[in-house]
Amino acid sequence: MNVNLKETIKAFIIDMDGVLYRGENRLPGARSFLQTLQREDIPYVLLTNNSTLTVAQYVDKLRRMGIEVPANRIMTSAVATALYLAGIAEAGTPVYMIGMDGLAEALTQQGFVLTAEAPEYVVVGLDTGITYHKLSTATRAIRAGAGFIGTNPDRTLPTERGLEPGTGALLAAIEAATDVQPRIIGKPEPGVFSTALKRLGTSPQETAMLGDRLETDIAGGAAAGLCTILVLTGAATRDDLANANVQPDLVFDNLEQLRACWH
Image (tube, rainbow, N blue to C red; front, side, top):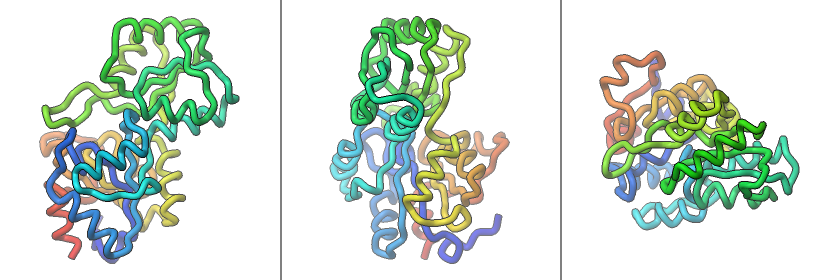
């Protein structure tokens, strides 16, 4: 795909982990790239598969890195998952959750009761305090008939220490113990891209998905009809790119290089 960025792209959907930062470390060009979008009045949404933090906590995390982003520009897989569940289950439904603050807040705001006692659904997000007991509780509930929902399929999480286990790793353990596949809500599923496009008010043809993962950001963006841009600061490497079935429209080493090409 031959893309003239400034002529073609009118809005961005941007991943956070591995694109704007790794762990607590801001990545090259992250602040200046977002400042460029804000200065030129180019709409964008930060769409993360990471369900650990609340939207307010993400605003604070970015601010600590010197990046100012309004809360209404942030979308998380936790919120998307809670909204999905609210569409199929009533408030008050018992839910067993493996996850952290972001997912707990999103589910309780939709009226779900978080409990290990006879849950009707098991909802799994990233949990850095995962234990055998939590995995066992989820396994028993699913084997007893509870629905199985995952916030995202990311097998790894880019951190300042390197790649670490992501939500997909936890889902794989539970799937292996139950022989039940989870219903995935976050990227690459089409629903989150549709929601992001509605928030932006743009069409797929004039919107770019900017991410670091081939199997979620790039595959999901391509399936949704978006221009896809890969940065090599997170999960994917050039070796991964050479062997991948899905290819991005554009590849940059980092956001600094992308911003330079924008002008």
